[in-house]
Length: 281
Image (cartoon, rainbow, N blue to C red; front, side, top):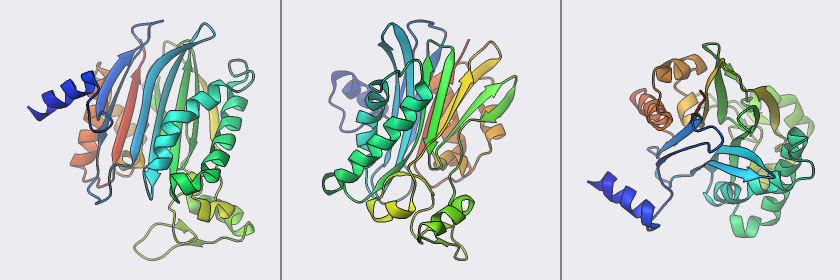
């Protein structure tokens, strides 16, 4: 009954928070569908994950806009990213002809604005993984942090993002005057605090922390089955191949996203879990 009431509230705009599940499809190619699902972790702080999953027309091109923002030390920064990052990307000069450059520039300028607004947005930060699908044919994926994007092509999982772990960028962090802790029983952390080497915000760590995204282009063709974007709450307990195998037989994108979050919970993931699945014809 509570699930039914939640859906009614979402439809009339009276939900007390962001919807925890949803779906949609392309108007250009209605066989391209997406679904998302979010589950709060077992921590005491409020849910800090935010998602974007929508199709939008810009200059006669259809854009599929998909993102997961995994906040830390507060939800204001990921909420700001949900509202502003894609608009910043789309407004960049030559966005459609040079999308990679537009994404890089928008990540940079958005991080600058977040730092300038630190009094308003707080001291926290956020990881991000974004995917832009252009006319159903070209995919541009970018990320900072450990939220991840994989694509299933020719029956195999391919990781499109890079997990920005502190241990992999230790020399760069140390060259800026920072350090990477490695205490027994804990994960490596930048200055003993943050478990990722790149993120938006985090003003107190920014001198040692990068916000430069990893960006990659991929072609969508008849061999491409689906795209998965998820926060580290899923990837801490599942490999890329396990995630892909989990949903290969599920045609509904929303149900696929739910199945992935359910599997992560069954594997005892305690973090917030956010997942988006985009299925191709």
